[in-house]
Image (cartoon, rainbow, N blue to C red; front, top):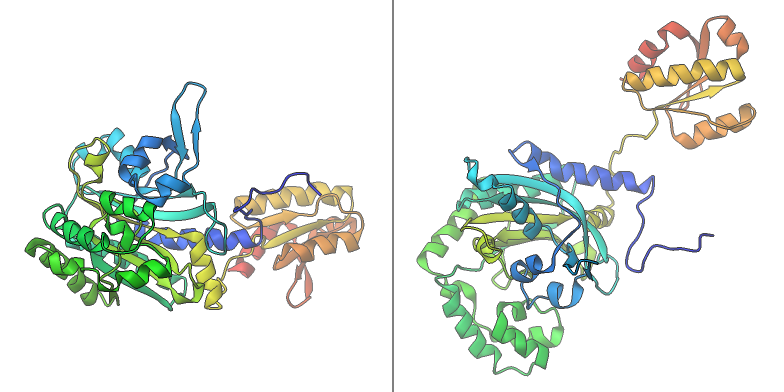
Length: 420
């Protein structure tokens, strides 16, 4: 037993379970890669102020959940708790918005870190795939991203998820709503910390998950009643585009999301089979974030989908992904000469694109065949001195148990034909 264990609130991804995570990441990324989104990868840590300004100083993420550190040089850094601020910072630093052809369309995949109370579906280290469209204000772009996420989930076989949709207004109409909401909230029986939020960002109070708070919010003013004509028209077009595309959604007038930078369109993907941690992903428009972190005005929209939560959603629906076996062919040498020859065969098969492994270290046919069974390979190649003298190897179908000799010089061709 090792002295060390994975830190609390984290877990290791190991085979064969890790193959499902890879398949989920690939499935979420596939529609993005076919829709003009290029891959971006940012550092695992950033300047603390990037998240304090962008995510919001009043959010739980910044006040309670960020892992922070001070370098030997005195810089204050934070492990990234989310991806949008980092991706926008990278795009601005590289002047991608000046290259022409806005929006800049980027997708990413990586690990994120939040200090939270560990529970199923909520970890301190988690994985997300995200997408950002930077530099354009267009309802079609908002709709595109929601459609691509819907497409990704459906490609995995998921059917029991819901899309919640709302508009948070803009800098013209939200201040009026903010004032009305603050007036309502100040009259409630709330703890001191929540009262501080009323003054900093009252919309965050609407996102409070505590039952005693939600009960008092029953009569809270709704943002939809304060939207300006431009925001109403924008939101109506997003809804029309989604409906025309056949993507079902539910209007959720109380949907806020937990980050300060959202404006106008906001959405969440939820799966009721996950209990209290029902959100599997979400996002929205963040037209003012670039200016918050020192950049020019760049209206943008994006989302992040949780890989961990998506895997749990698959389990809730009883979906097992058709993950290709890690090994298609397994080579079993019987004797030193066979070991030398089959090692060369394995290399040749791999170069031909066949997933192939070799029985290392085993002694005797029984041990070799145990290795072959554990590999999950469809075919096993067995060769001894007599086989090699005849210029053949034995090709065994591990499903049927049938075995036949195959000429050594025709082996690669034969195996590829069988697997096809």
